Amino acid sequence: MNENIETTEVEKEEKEVIIPEFYRDLVPDNKHERLWHFSHRHDPANPRKPVRTPDGLPHKEPFDWKEFFPNGNDHIELEVGSGKGAFMAEYGKMHPEINILGSEWDYTWAAFAMRKILKETNGNVVMLCGDIFYFLRDRVQDNTIDAFHMYFPDPWPKERHHKNRLLRPDFLVEVARTLKPGKRYFYWGTDHKEYNDSALETFDAFPGCKIIERNSAEPTEGIMTGFEVKYRKEGRPIYRSIIEFKK
Ligand SMILES: C[S@@+](CC[C@H](N)C(=O)[O-])C[C@H]1O[C@@H](n2cnc3c(N)ncnc32)[C@H](O)[C@@H]1O
Image 1 (cartoon, rainbow, N blue to C red):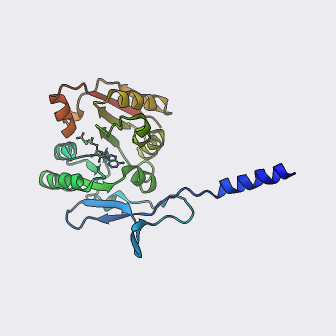
Image 2 (spheres, protein in one colour; image 1 turned 90 degrees about the vertical axis):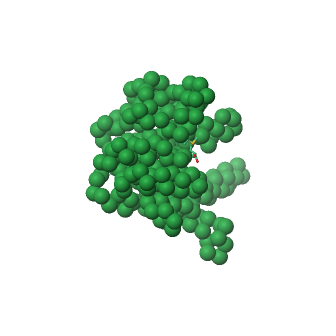
């Protein structure tokens, strides 16, 4: 009898644990055209405190790509972790018919990238300053993205930091959900062998994923990213792959 009461109490406590989820808002940058912030909403009474959702559920608010790209073109590609924006600037210049969203959570780099992009492209490249995982999860609607690019992501080499890596199954759930049906490609590159091995394992294990070029892909359309140029000069091996997501 007592045992049952204790179990019920424990179960009740477990059910009441609320994992914090925060409100995030999409706000245009006040200095750079086509740069948007996706950042925590703060409590006006305590501007250092991000506001939690009351129920611990994600704050989902579907958004329309036309907000970023009013040019009426619905071919959308997304770059994860754009750094100084070398890839997007070049790719966007080569393909004015493609709309590209870059992402970078470091404002200094995002602003640097945007200045370069504004000089070199014509309205088809937009930059999001914020955590791209939450933007995908909470804002991007199903079947709206044509391709993903992810080049030289932070490798978080120490084992205790691997949990910070972005190429995780829950990230791939969002990639698979948001890619349009049809030819759905994810372009991947890194210099970090161990992260590469674990990323390719994650792709291999993910339902509907097929690595169509395993470590043998060339830089996408011949464009090297900022980090790639540096690492190639240092003679580091580079691992590039192309992954198809089937629906
Ligand atoms: C090592 S740099 C590579 C930059 C660029 N892709 C290149 O190859 O030159 C990785 C970038 O991803 C950004 N980043 C990491 N996690 C991110 C996230 N969750 N959302 C947005 N940016 C992120 C980092 O700030 C960093 O600038």
